[in-house]
Length: 351
Image 1: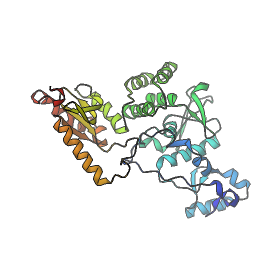
Image 2: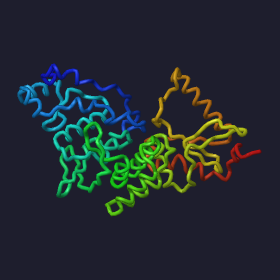
Image 3: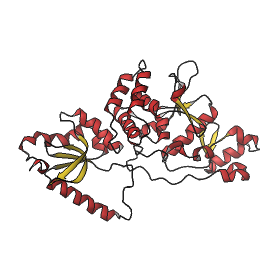
Image 4: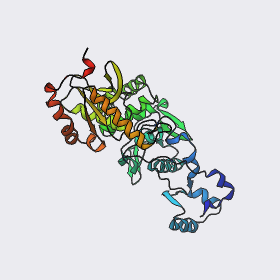
C-alpha cells in the first residue's frame, strides 16, 4: 500500500467507525445529530489531493500503480483516498470533501448537505455531489457534480469540519424545492424530530426564498412536516396516505384497552377501528432493547399486535415498496375503509 508515502502522516489516517448498513439500501435512517455526516473529522483525514502528494515526492506513476492495485481510490480527478467505506453516505461525503478542497467557493447543499446533517435522502442522490456556488453564470453539471447558482445569504451558510455547508433550514427548503415530495417530507420530518431545526426557522427560510423556483412545493413540505414521524418510511407513508381518499390518520396513535394504553401505532384511525404499521422502518434508537434477543423482539411484537387486536383494531402493515407506490398502498388500505361501516367500534370508545 502506498500509504500516501508519508509515514509521519499515518497517524492522521484514522479509520472510520463501522456503521450499520441501511435495511432498505434506499435511504438514510433518521439519525440524531452527530451520528452521520461531518460531525467527525474522518472524511477530512482520508482525502488527499494530487498536488499535495506530488509536492512530497510521490510520482504520478506511483499513484497510477496503486490505483491499479486497488490500494488507492481516485475519488475524482486529482483527489485520492486509501479507504473504501462500506457506507455509501460516507463515500459520498469523501467525494464532497475532495471537491471542496479543489473548489474553495463551493458550498455543500441540497442532498449532499442533507447527508452531512444526517437527513434521509433518495439513494439516487448519492451519484453526484450537490453544491451551490455564488460565482457568476449558470450552474453547470459534470459527471460527479451538480452545481446550482442560487443566491445564499451569509446566515444560510455554516462551516462544519472546514467545509462550507448550507444550514439545516436552508437545506430542507432547497430539497423541498427540487426533490421528490416523499423524500423532501422525510428530510423535513427528520430535521424537526431530531431538533436540528424549528418550525419557525423553516417558516422563515420559506419566506426568504419566496421568489425562487419550486418554493410552492417547499412551502407545502414545511406545512406538511410532522416532528412525530420516527422514520423515513413513516414520512413517505404519510405522503402516500394523504393521496388516498381516506381520513387523515393520527401519527403515533395511542391504542388503549380498558382505558389503559397498550401500544402506539404508527398511524391510527380511531373511528374506523384501523391502525397502520410501517414495517421495516429504521427508527432513531436501537432496533433491540438492551439485552434483548431477536427472538424476544419477535415475541414482544406478537404480543403487542395481540393487544391492538384485542382493543378492537384491524392492523394493516406495509413496507417501503408499498409506501412508494400509490397502487400498492391503496390495495392494502382502501379495502378496509370500504368496510368500515360494518366494523365494530374499537373497545377504547366503550364504557
